[in-house]
Amino acid sequence: VQLQASGGGLVQTGGSLRLSCAISGLNLDYAVIGWFRQAPEKVREGVSCISSSGGIWYFPNSVKGRFTISRDKAKNTVYLQMNSLLPEDTAVYYCAARSSEVCYRGAAAYDYWGQGTQVTVSS
Image (tube, rainbow, N blue to C red):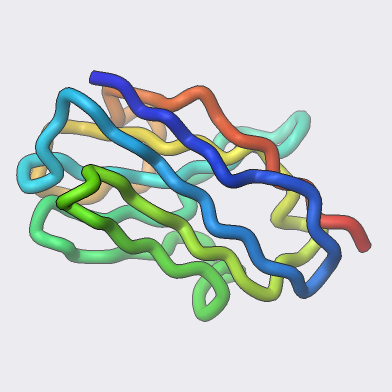
């Protein structure tokens, strides 16, 4: 199983980015995909998750209404559209997967991880 995260970059406050997570070796019909982020000197936190049935969760209240998770099963890719970005969104963003039907918020629940993509929001 391999996950390849991409799409990070440097944007100004209020800008947008779309992260992509290309997955190989795992069928999205039987897997949960989560997006996490880790800022310097902070613990890795769950941002969003999409279950095998398409159920969606957003974990920090701060991203609700600004971030949107989606998936393209034909491309085996999961996306995180991030709008109205704020400096506090600055972090390395990771996608992760587990063979399950249920979304989990904690990073320890996930078995497979992508390499991370840096998102920097300037003020």
